[in-house]
Length: 116
Image (cartoon, rainbow, N blue to C red; front, side):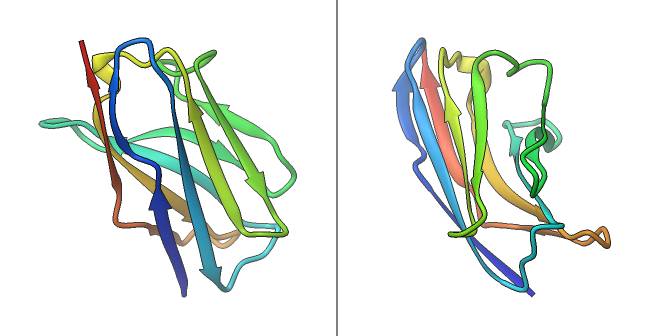
């Protein structure tokens, strides 16, 4: 079992920045991936960014160049630095943990609202 707790959401104006953090606890290894998903109102949940234990990253096309995911394996944390935010980034953001065997865990989510 893995527990995930997100923090850092809030309200920001378009063009601003926010940093999300997620602390993981439980059965965690460096073989597991961590990431962030988001779900906007009326839309399906989508992958935002993902990072392996070795630091390889991938991003949704919509956030490339604006968002940066980082991971601290010693502290079992993952962060998402979000810059140049637009109203289209408004969503509930979920921390995600993917085990090497393919199991997925999500946190409860944190709301990010970007005003125009």
